[in-house]
Image (cartoon, rainbow, N blue to C red; front, side):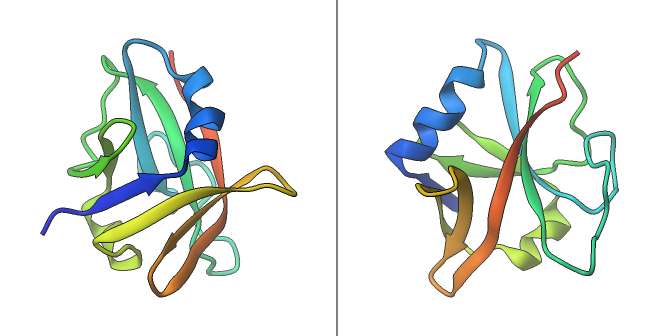
Length: 118
């Protein structure tokens, strides 16, 4: 089964202004592996970022595609152990943070949007 991520209208409104015509979105597990993950595990917390790159930049580590209602996103397939087949990304209105969740609860309460475009 293909993974699917549904973004709320508010989450789309937060992300869309940062997208360009040739942007690719990586739902990056921040484990310190690969050119777009700089921090690694902090206190063994599960941490994801939306990394924006140009479609001409390499993304070999991101070998699994996730369907979304915005545009396809890509993950490192091994990070799928933290993700389910049906997920949501919503805006937390008080703090304006993005929350990644599934039917079991919150996966990450503070998904940052990071530009790594060159």
